[in-house]
Length: 595
Image 1 (spheres, rainbow, N blue to C red):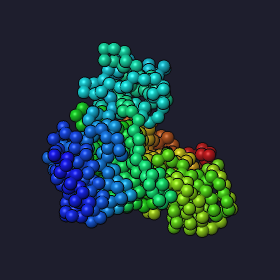
Image 2: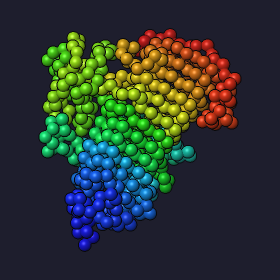
Image 3: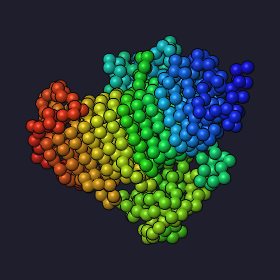
Image 4: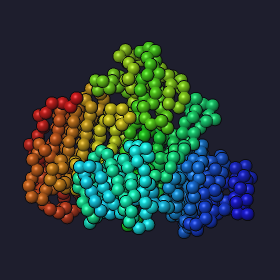
């Protein structure tokens, strides 16, 4: 009877017979007791909101917990598809999702707000336990899963095929902090008495000891994505509406705001966006809870191919198995040259990603063999073949264009990351490729703090301008900031290309504050570097390879085992923290340019 009610309400809302201003999930049959499968009712209300054509709000009851059981279509997501002017108001409600499924999806929509929701998974989508034996030379580890965690799936290399579903990590059992090495599982075998042996490839868990903790992703079987098979527009033909990747997926949508979303687990990435514009993520909390070691099994926020860069504010991200934030604009390979201004392209990123090229968009033509920019040009015509392939006509000739060169979409403005906190996690707090400003952030216990690096293909475009302002870097394993430009033969969007001001560094011995390669210029202003006993050697702490130091002002080393008493974010920081600052002699490492 309950399901008949939500079906009738959904039909009336789609038809405009009843008011679509506010759609209460309870009117569609959602119970919210954390036990019943509310998936059908919730998917119905999201479908109704997608079809109304008028502004509406999907309203949850804040005291309730809504369970989403296994469901194949769209990986069970609550999906807004081609919707306009929709607000999802969670009022603090909890979504509990079964791990083969994912939580939320937004596809080719505009003016969408997702607010005040909590997301968790049952069962937890990974296994954690205590290490009972470890042999790094052989790449073997034995562990006993902790109570309340499903055991790992037994299998050999025919099951564990070196994909990202095989990630595994270790933790210090006294602090619960990540050791900063991850490996790929090769085989899992049950030993009896509740213990398992894992063989792994790649790095070695050299820091882990007996009694420390181990975690690996659990496998849930293959999941299929939902594809847009009926599209008449060739640029959308067979594109992926959603996949089994992120917990929250936002695809080719404009003016989307995520506001105060709390996530406690994710089988893969927590948030993934593809080809979106005017994206704001505010107050996202990715946190561990209930004795768990992991809050997300891959990147916290993964943003790709956004012409207008995102704004990310007031977020807390910890305990992710990869990067906290990753921002990139993947390129398109040139596969055929018809003329100096007309070429055929294929998108270079993974199979479910679209090319984002189109008329009026500006691109950098890049020569990968010689790591240089050939030219920038505007696309005047684009003829799609499908969602990943097409013919591009430029507004000018580029005589040197050849097969295996590429186009990178030029971003408009800078990505903004501000007032965010990054706790212990595996890789980097921020990995970015397009112009980015990072201000008033705290980064602790990461492998690396901020990285601007060029992977040579999908991890693009070539490294561009980075500004870091008033940030704290504490206990970073490898380095605080790494900037790796492939060469100086392209537009790095600024000279200085890298600017760091009014920031505080408290790093372990051997971990440099900066390593900058092939930058067109570096400016360091009013930064403080704390050390406990031995002042670090400047040419090892401040490493500039083929990168001129344009400005060196007000930077100070301070011998102290504790932070200064004045908060870095105090409104009088410049007058109090840095009034006695003096510069140091500039040191530029005399090594050959990176090729």
